[in-house]
Image (cartoon, rainbow, N blue to C red; front, side):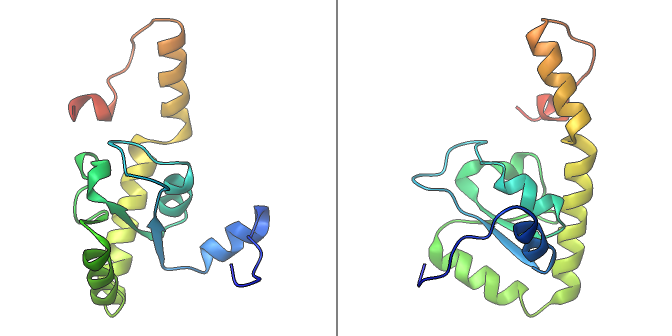
Length: 131
């Protein structure tokens, strides 16, 4: 965009670590419980994440762990409001990251994939309580 090339690999992670807020925007219409790995990259790197409420991510993360928005105007207003309150931004981002690591870490997701693959059930997953 405007002759600026995309950022990849380590440079991408370095830029994320210098950021405070992440916008989890998807191409096309938002879908329930869908996101690319972008969401994990944003929240996993401790950014305060904004996501469209149509994704229903608020079923898993509370309003003190994630910011949802209804439309572009709502998103803009919420960004303006939160960007002036570093303490609140950092508190929400930390709670979101901590919860995401607790319930959606790679070990839990790998266990889920294996249980689905081999049709075994040994663990109750956080998201099963939410549906």
